[in-house]
Length: 262
Image (cartoon, rainbow, N blue to C red; front, side, top):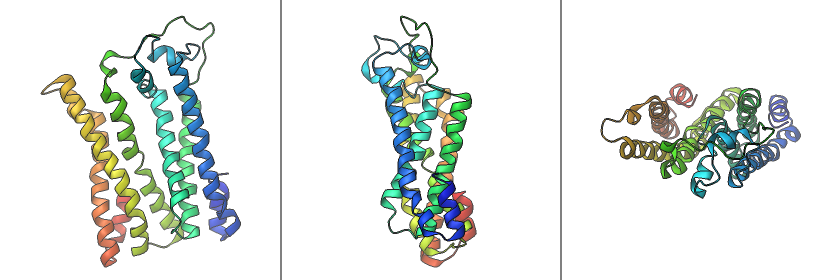
């Protein structure tokens, strides 16, 4: 519903269908947030009937590492990924009041579609709620290297930037469908890109610092694939911010701005 009806409404110029987008997007965020809260609660109470908790937690682990253990594994981090996807969609739904109705409906439908795709991926290959019967008495604990304050700060910051860049993509695809690529569009997309860029910058800086004090000078983590995977979109987002400013002020670099957003 969150992406089908608004998309149909935008293509048919049906205001009633387009008006479904904000509430459906916020509902998607609420449902994903509840799922994330349920998984977090399973970690807090050491519910070892959940396989994910068994593999990444222990009843005697400090509270901060129980919480950070939620995203200290593939399944939990994918749920965090979808949560932030839904969060950015909800923020646009709630605070994007200055956006034209058709563009807003398209942005929200595309953002919701990305979220639905990742939800299908989680359900098919990375379900964090798989149960064990009988439940083990104790968990296997989290990798000792990950039991660090860096795990509590680095992934959420990085994901807010890394996944947050998806909203720029949604704006770009929406503009292409809408056929309206102008200075006003650049003005609308720039603050959302800037927010994602700030979080991505902080996440990369925190990850570099964590890798340095964990492994010392010459540690492979400083420039491992994880750091590079977040640095590449940082470069693109930095270029996009500058390009959007030029587009807004001079009505130039339209194709380049759209390409960078995608």
